[in-house]
Image (cartoon, rainbow, N blue to C red; front, top):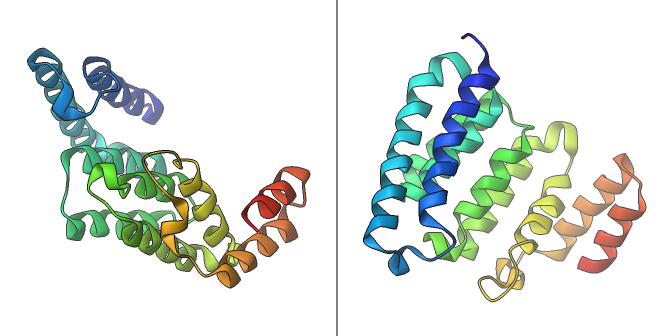
Length: 187
C-alpha cells in the first residue's frame, strides 16, 4: 500500500484507459462515446494524480505525468510554467519532464515552436551545472522525433552554435557512434 510505483501505476492505468477510449484520432473526430470515455478517465487520472501527490511527488515521473495532464486539459501557460519550475526545483536532471513539456508545446496541443524553444532553453539552464549545454542538443533531438506532417523542427530556429555546443558536451560525456551519428545528422 505504501509503494510509490504501485500508486503511480494505478494513475497511469487511468491515463491509458482514457487513451483506449480516445484512440489516435483528433479530438474533433471522436464519437460522443469516445469523447465521454476519454474525458471521464482523463478526469479520474488527474484526480488520482492529485490524491497521490503527497506520497509520490518525490518521484520525478509524477511531474512528467502531470505535464501530460496539463497538455490534455489545455492548461494556460502560466500554470504550466509553474509546474515545470516546481519539477525542475525538485529534480532538474529528470529529462522525461522536459521531453513531455516539449510534446505539450507541439502545435497540435496548442503550443508553438517558440514555446518549444523556450522549454529547451530553460531546461538547458536548469541542467547546465552538471550537463553543460547538452540539453540544447537533446531538446532539438527530442523535438525532431515529432517531425512529420505535424511539425517542422527547423521552425524552432535554435542557433546552431548553441546546438553544436550541446553535441560537443554530449560527446564529451558519452562518446558513442549513436551520438556521433545524431550530431552528424543535425549538422
